[in-house]
Image (tube, rainbow, N blue to C red; front, side, top):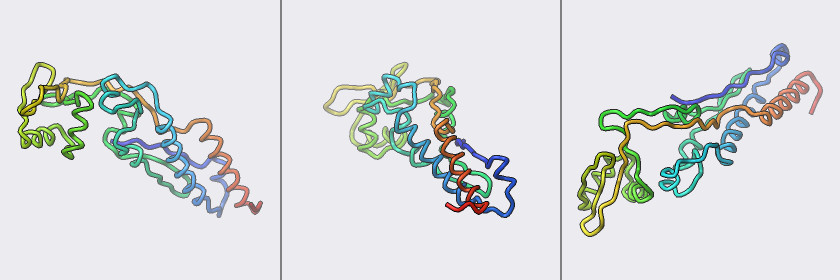
Length: 200
């Protein structure tokens, strides 16, 4: 389930008959997308947990593969503008919550080496990576909290940490802040002025 924000025309603008305000709503939908992307670029607190920082080799919250950033899209109608994403994990990033693993639990990359191996083998899931490594001659064993791997000549290392649940803090990135509100209101007033014959 994704996340969406919607901005409707204010009452005074809705009362204007025969005014085509859809172009400004289309523009404002793109403004909302840009605002969300700027928030992500600046970094949304709180900072990543130490393990996440190691896996991502940095502390850029909400930034890893670029999927969230690129998934935010504009939508509009004659009287409203919105921006949103339908990524499954977007809502829990926005609002926070607890992710509970099914079956054998949640398999979390144990470090930067796991992420590097996933990219090297183009693996999107733990199962895909394990299959690729098995084909490359790796052996595996489990401890109570981790799934470990060993190459033919290397030392064993933790591949995935296994947890029953993980608490995700809220990192809201899709909302209208004061700066957005001022810009939106200015653009709507300008469009209304033009619709009433005030010119540009």
